[in-house]
Length: 495
Image (cartoon, rainbow, N blue to C red):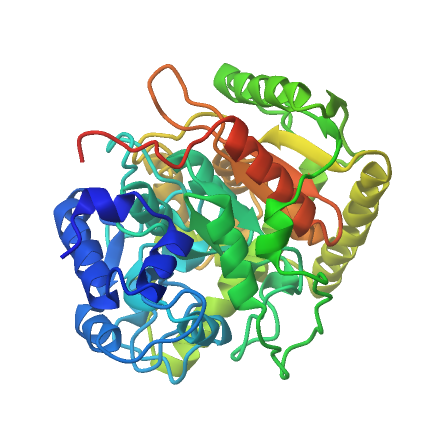
């Protein structure tokens, strides 16, 4: 047996080394993970689909790979496990089993990981909090009254609570970085095309969405990137350019002296909390002590227009999912959350030429950010514009919900989605997280690093956005910051 204190002492790379040396077994590690999950998950609601039987059978088998024997959790969105449902946080998908493993799940299994459950996500990953009607709210281990973020909220809560050292996640608008920032963890969103989205789709959200992980240590994320790029997806749309050496090696290198531009102004023009500004100022101080040049600077981008264009695409994403599920399962509109239906309705109200124009503007944002990166290696921002919100704080107000329901009954929902009330509500929900969408739209790698906590003890990360192919630079800097301010040993109390 492995007790929790011993289990928590190691990251995934460290646990794999113990297994490889024969000091512990995969079965012992799995039982330690399950014991921890049984202890804390009733408080957190991080794991929504246990897979203990499947995991125990796998842990008892012959395992190989660089991470053989390490317990692991999938995100219950897009990370299909053959024969099991992928619920995606929605009542509409109860009982619909996946026909095959997704490419990245297969790569995780090939690396020797032992999958023992799936983690919570908001319905279809469309929110920055994890409070789906289907499974109920997921809570932040640092303060159970607050959100762990979204959409990989269950993954972040599980890692922060010590159930696993690293967990599967994904990011289409900040869904790795936001939960990492909320839970005191490291989260890297890889650049466009680096990881596969197959086999059911070529790429998610025009390549703005990608799989990845949330971890306690930088080297775990690097090791996972190596596992996820170990083989080619011959049916995918890209042949990604990989570095000459493993990401794990790049993460261990010195980053050299970097030139970093930082901003704390919200791209939306909305308020930025003093704690978020303090997080960046603290990061700037640490970076300067490490010898980097840091100065105020930001890319020349219309943030509000970018937000509109992001929401246009995001709503189309929701509408496409709903239409597909209704066509293939016979699901009714009431099987989807009202907020999701309203988001989808906004897409049906957009004319095709307007959608294409919104997507074409992505090129302008990408080139503006590239111009910024000609002068600066990295862009530093808050990850969040405010500390993690309380559970339910971003719920749609009753008056707006009532108006939406009336419009829906009168079959005027398309008209409602065009109203200023809908758009203002959408911007209100985006205002706490206005910094993350830029990296998705431009396809650039970005990471959240846990360098700050509020006076109330809540984590509040900072974001770095890299240039094209900049994963190695981000990982190297993150390792340097991790050495300067170790965070992996920090653990929430009282759960």
